Image 1 (cartoon, protein in one colour):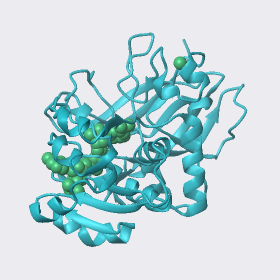
Image 2: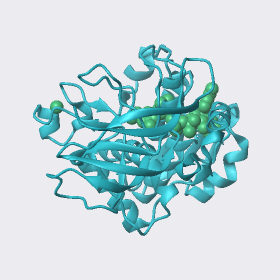
Image 3: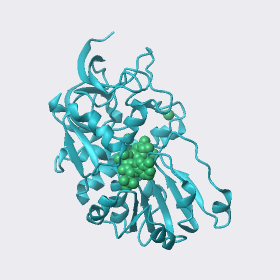
Image 4: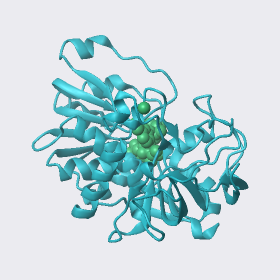
Length: 349
Ligand code: NAP
Ligand code: ZN
Ligand code: ZN
């Protein structure tokens, strides 16, 4: 067995209590692995879902975090693409089988043999992977992204999940010039969806429950803003959109938003509320509408997205916090009170 590195971070220890400072061990990098000093980590709503065991699969102690930016601290003897000091990113997964059809086609996130998530993944020895709310992480070089030095670092971290999830959904559904697109929910994913949809030439409407987000929605690039409680405005939008991109984290009525799609329009689900919610078949059948999902993106596409962002100067709008603010950040996100991503500065650990 290799040597161990003492790592410190924050962990949930059960489904109700706040996260607490937590010290644990990581294995030293193997020959193809890289040890990364973590500089910043974004707070994704998936971290909250899993800390609170909303899907019933969380193993405690749980160290969340999969929007990681850091610098290479040391490398294994067979690492070819990184050197000490490189600026790098790590997203939602840190391994996959490498030989199934999805891995071969650069869609490792859909690995037939199960990709290894950055946190809460079960390793062969029975221990669990621990995420980016910590000072360092060890990852195989194949699953590490190269990050441009030219963008503001904390604002790049959210690209590793919120960024790739929305970029991939927009690209896969070929959303582009002239499409009328509604973005439902203006949080971490929602605000990146606005930026990418706009960048790809779509006509963007934000559907939000937060009236206070109207002005900044326009600053992000939206053309229109509709408050979801505004029945009159919502009625005007019925049957008008080519796509609705749904990023809402809590239970809500999909039928209301299906109704906003034109014939052949598509509801793209990104948010993962834990509850099952019914969909009325008639809303699909009589307008030939579609409901599809999308899940993060592969390593190649994540690199493409990071490079696109560096070229087009796209980053997240962030509120940088110290680690002892994580629990307050969780509470604020549950109230929709975020503009638009909390990012933890790990120098405060
Ligand atoms: P977030 O920053 O907390 O944003 C979620 C937004 O949803 C809120 O800002 C709010 O927007 C809206 N919202 C929250 N509660 C609501 C409620 N009760 N009713 C209506 N709207 C509500 O979360 P996020 O990090 O963007 O993540 C959003 C969802 O995507 C989560 O479920 C997360 O797990 C999931 N996710 C999926 C993927 C994937 O690959 N598919 C990747 C990452 C995350 P307004 O204030 O504008 O209404
Ligand atoms: Zn995420
Ligand atoms: Zn595979």
